[in-house]
Image (cartoon, rainbow, N blue to C red; front, side, top):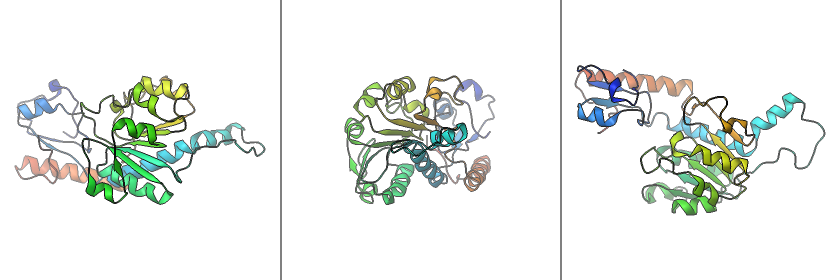
Length: 269
């Protein structure tokens, strides 16, 4: 199968030998049961890095410059005479950007943001990555300091027990009132109730999300009522070229696994 629900009961059939998931993430897989049964898993890392980084930057810019809100004003007749502070947002020039998770995608995001004139990059994660950080002059800091000093926070980390719910009331409470929060990793990294309260109360300026809990997000979810929250339907890797490459890699992983050969990209359990 391509993809697998995160329930051991869905791993039916004693003949199941190989799973190939069309994703870089694998938090949707019942890994304990898969490992117990000796099932091999193929996944698709690397090939979606650029597309997801592009989407992260697009979402950040759309959020901080209030593009969806501005477009709606054009449609609704809100665009009238010129006003000095109407539709003003926040720019990247001379800003501090904090990246949670300086992996492949985090580095690709920083690489794309650097030409905008970002003054300083901060990052946090499981440990320092001096070789990766050197390209951006990025400084490894604790999560609390990243929250306090960043004008923009971009979350690109994997979902693990350590990162689940990491962006919570305490985290948002430390952020600047003018700061913008962007998450393109996994929805469960964020406590969405705490995020809603931070946005609704003006504790932070805005948020852009490509991932939520659950997915799809119910249309009556409180976050969707906020003008300062831009939510996309998990389209980080959604370019024609990227999805085609992912599909071919997933198929090749599956075929190699069935033949008992090394997979192009096998998840080591």
